Amino acid sequence: MAQVLPTPKLALQPVFSRRVPFRTHCGYSGYPPPSFLGFRLRRDTSRPFPQLADRPKKMSGDAAQPMLDLQHRWVVALVEADTRALDTILVDSYVDTDEGGSRFDKAGVLAAVKSGDLKLASITLLETHVHRYGDSAVLTGASAQTGSFQGQPIAPKILFTATLVLQNGKWRAAAAHRTAVPNHSN
Picture 1 (cartoon, helix red, strand yellow):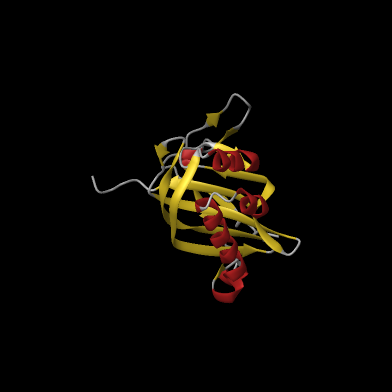
Picture 2: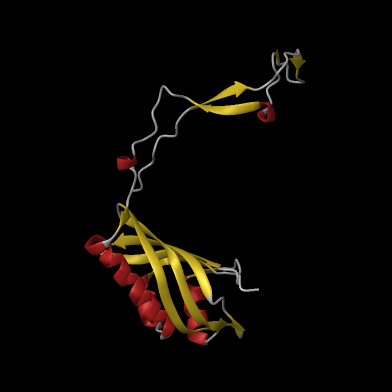
């Protein structure tokens, strides 16, 4: 289960150089008027920020290996258009958001792979960071890819976020989101 960290209390501190009476249509009367533009946030020092040690940490090495193994199998299944493998990797409620902002469920992804609408010639993982939260994990990173979707070339480099869940002792993909990295060579 993801750890919910307490939010530090913030106090509003007025930032006005003069005091002018103010009355609103809802009956507020006071000095100064309650305006978010006229207030600045000040941290309530009576409650300290949560300690860094309390926050979930990035995983590496042996602890992250089962999640990285799933990611590797996922990439291989996509490149090889292996819908049987993808069916076991993706949970039934899987949601995919692609570089263009389109969303697909598990059935939509499997249909696109099976029909040939989605053709991936290669995927090279450039970096992956694993963040574990109990029986779920988030993978963030970047990859280079070649291929096409519905006859159009896909973005050559993407940033991704993938959500994994541990079900019956096995890691599976629950969601993925990709963003194209703009070409800065122009």
